[in-house]
Image 1 (cartoon, rainbow, N blue to C red):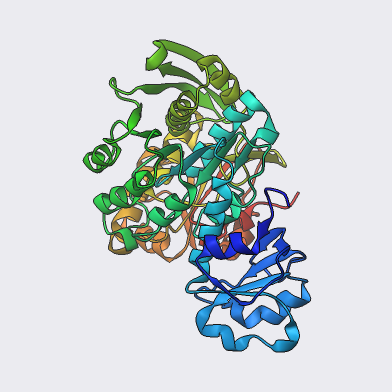
Image 2: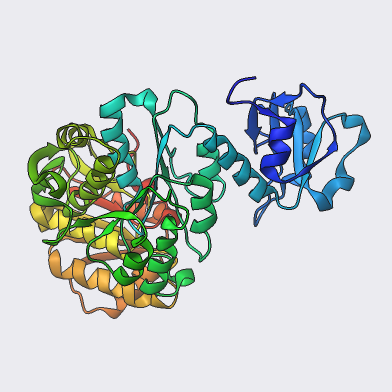
Length: 465
């Protein structure tokens, strides 16, 4: 049996469950599965449940997909049919069992140094920058990083279960939009380095206010290795909360202030790149770097990544090389040219902080009369929604009075109607309606920004190539 397999005893011990139908002494599973639509051969199928589904309704599908065993809640034991002849692990909570099995698997590799990242904005950017730096040091096969947007209560354990003996580093992104979500995931990860990349008005519908955001983000330090390193912004809302949470650990701060341990000065950029100067206080060294990322917000993220990499023992020179090689995944400031029109696809998600970051970046080089801003609604702002949309649009109108504004969604449209702006503005109910109009307005030399929350699906406006 290899280090990626699980024996019956390991599964029951890790999950805290008991076998209803006991497997043989030499029984083991090769994987942990949660999706019956995929091949479950040799796997323990864990029956998770959510708002719109319950996998306990799909146990027969799991068996048809060749699952080697089932993990279900105690209260559903009556669903098991004798003719299935399959080992069944009963647990109180299948999600907690899944997370605990992932934690058990992660603890098999004490030599792997693990980084946990959270933040209101820029989590994925920071994760990808750190990945690039670490891969420069040890090669791509030596680094496991969160895939896509799998940063929630199911995605985090799923990523940890991909760990193997070839990995030297793991970079795990942890998201949240409710109080109490980060702590169990941090316990699952047990990081050696924990990072709060930012605290900004995001998910205020459930986190209440910026102090609530900071308090939830600070839970990334709750299960940090006692000998680990805590990393956080030198200046941000709720800094007192972060300072208190990081006090028991070795810590570094990053940012733009003179007291930051790691600072990246933004020297200016353009559509396809920028120049930054990264200051490493522990080495009293500054390195100037040209890289493909652009915007002052990405320089800020580079400082966070530098702090992480130094905590893991990398030199400033290796970090600089890794920064130069970094490329972000799709729909995050992805620049393309289609029929002589420059498209900036930043449609993956949006909140007030990321909206303002995009606008300030464009202001560096864009000519307003050659600019079309397609801005979509921002979600999960709760009672602050109207005020935050108003702030964003007021800034955009003031910065680019000659630009074309194409606003998508009820909040953007209603807010625009309340503002006295006599520029070129049109409003649309959804991205499909907007796409049909925008395609008739394109011309060579135009630069188009797509920016909105995920549910707006603004990428539908992007022409097919």
